Image (cartoon, rainbow, N blue to C red; front, side):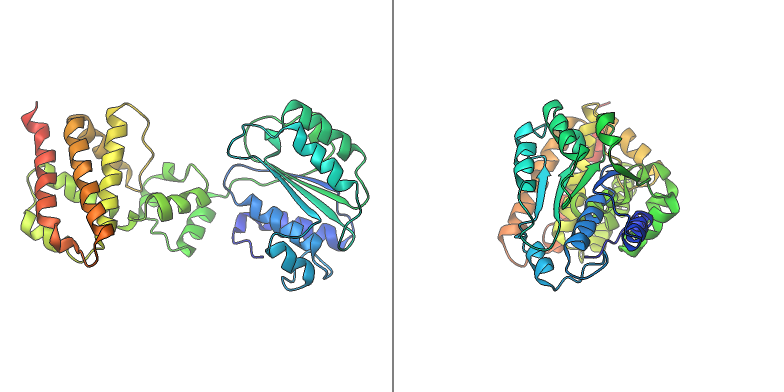
Length: 335
């Protein structure tokens, strides 16, 4: 298993060196922040402990590795927070006690991953403490702690702690570039990197699939609001763009404007600092009802694109831009 997060390399080297010197602990606490990819490091470590090959670099092809990859390895147990629960209950730890009461089915190790450990309720934390105070010889406990929520000191003091700091700005930018992200906006506004680079990549790929045209689209919105763009010429610019990409970009801008109108703190978009300020000014001058009507119009077009084959931007771009211009110019008429 490959972990493509360079900020985790130091922690991985520490584990490798501990294994080579036969100094592995039975209980590890990975102290980090959310969405730095620490779960991948823990999985990689667990696979190395399970693999039939010596060392912690799992081969990926032995019987044990094959079972892990198919999520059917009997000597690995995960205790994770479910979507329906706010805490990990004591019952989960009681199951863990039962899990460790038997010998390993394969090899000489049984492994428990608890993620996130700060979600254990009071009784679950106490029950876990009793196990790790005198852990079974064949047991390994890998605990992930990734939020500011506290973990009992009695628990943390019995673990080998591995702290994973946030990556530097330079490291984050370099990694984002390696993943194909245009970092121009990040260079102009450091606050866009306030979260983890993994979270930012997810945001670009999932929430902002159109990020590469976001700045252009918003720039054109601004000039339309000032009456400085010719709709016919502008429509030619967008005729070759994927229609869903364009519609999602406009939807994203509408949603952000809606958040600003409701005085919610909007998520930072991948725009420059100046453009984010201009977006807030524009939002404050627009009527929310008009914004919602335009967004409904976008959803209608997107629905047609998703249910019909062969629809291109050229099929709807001129009337769409005209409606957008009317929306943007309304800020002057309603003052």
